[in-house]
Amino acid sequence: MDGERQSIINRLNRIEGQVKGIRKMVEEEQNCAEILMQVAAVKAAINKVGTIVFQTHFRRCLEAAVRGEQDLAFVDDVMKMLTKYIS
Image 1 (cartoon, rainbow, N blue to C red):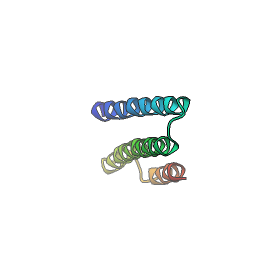
Image 2: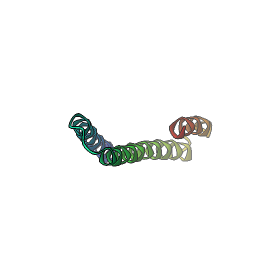
Image 3: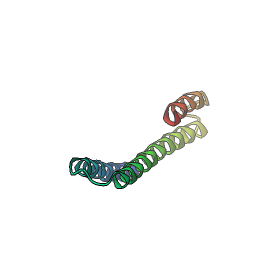
Image 4: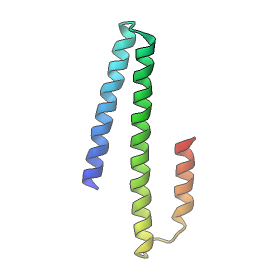
């Protein structure tokens, strides 16, 4: 998990840098098309982070269920979480 956590943190740091770059572009009144391209890149990057977090959580829950440490009721919770994520 530590490797996954560090990967997520690294991605979030890059996203933070991208957002700061967008703010600077807006402050400097740069081309709207270029700003929108950067916004789209940030959206894609944050969606990737969400996907990684979801996959990691689901994998851990599923592994615990297979080992008998958790019943399959977690599936309902995971589905609720997924619904919130994709909404």
